Length: 269
Image (cartoon, rainbow, N blue to C red; front, side, top):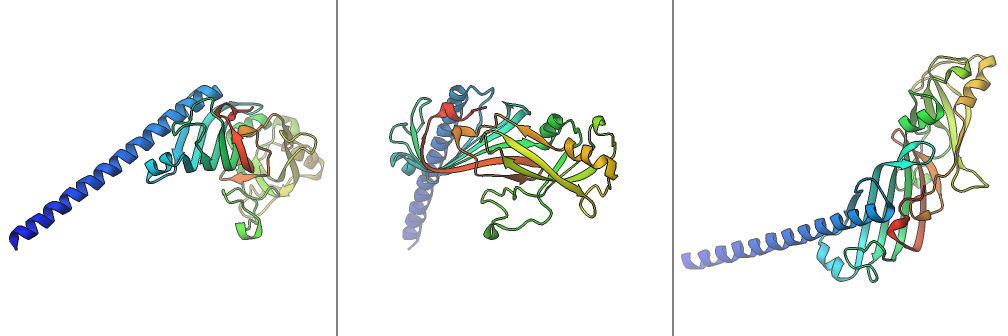
């Protein structure tokens, strides 16, 4: 009986070693694939540094053998960007066909994608510098709703109407107090690469700067929060489908299906 138990224990240990070894090989292979893809994106899109890449696949090797990744994410922080100086670029791909690209996705390969989510993320610091408002803070609309009712996208981006912009207007506005302004975001009807900021009113009360603005200063203060940001082209040239806030960032997002991309299209602006 003792020999049987020893045999069973030895078999269990051997099986565990095999499983751990297989998991280790799978994990190591996925890390190598992510490293190679990150390097290829940097070279193809002429980025300053390697972007973050995540291939969301476990186990990884079976997906590579099937020439299809379920989900792939690319994120490049602090990229040189038109108008605002720096921005973050993101792309999330689903059902990634590797037939023409290999599991390492060559720099010049054409990659069919079942669904593609593309984003430009502009933080409040860089947007504030562009507006001349050094202490700008951006928040989601005060009356936010959930995804079921259309108020937030699947990626957590708020509605485009009624965002709360708080900050001290530039001296040209003639009012040197921190204020909160309701701002709508939209894409210019004549140019899908231009983000438009349209202030609609001064906000007071809880969760605002709670600063009233005299009537004779209101127009100048509101104007300080208005702007057009051209050349905001989403990664891989996706057309924008929503604009809003997430945290203190302004985000432009585009979602499309059944497209073919190449890595050099990641950076457009």
